[in-house]
Amino acid sequence: MFRRVRARVVLPRIRGRLVDLGCGDGWLVRAYGSGVGLERTDTDDWTRCDLPYDCVDTVTLVATWNYLSPTQREFVLRTAHRLLARYGRLVGTCATPVGTTR
Image 1 (cartoon, rainbow, N blue to C red):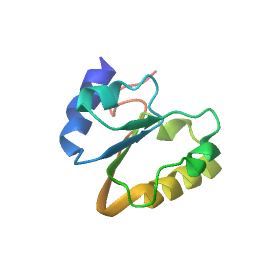
Image 2 (spheres, one colour):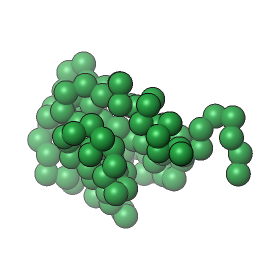
Image 3 (tube, helix red, strand yellow):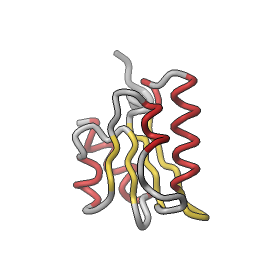
C-alpha cells in the first residue's frame, strides 16, 4: 500500500534522467521506466559510485532518509549534489507517511 502512495507522490516529480539512492528492489526505476538504482549497505559507498558529475536530472530518496545516520545523510546529500545536473531535482519521502503510526 505505501509503495502505491509513494509512487503517486514521487513519479510526477521525476524529470529526465533518474538515480534512485536506496533503491531497494528497484521498484521506482521500473515504475518510471528508466534510470539507475543504487542500493548500498554502507551508505558511504554511494559517494564512490562511478556515475559522472552532473549526469542526472532527478535523484530520489524514497523511504530512505529515516534509516540514515547524520553522517550517512551528509554523504547522501553530497552524492546527490554531485550527480545532479544544473536545475536538477532531489525528491524524497519519509519511511512512514504523515498521519500514520507504528
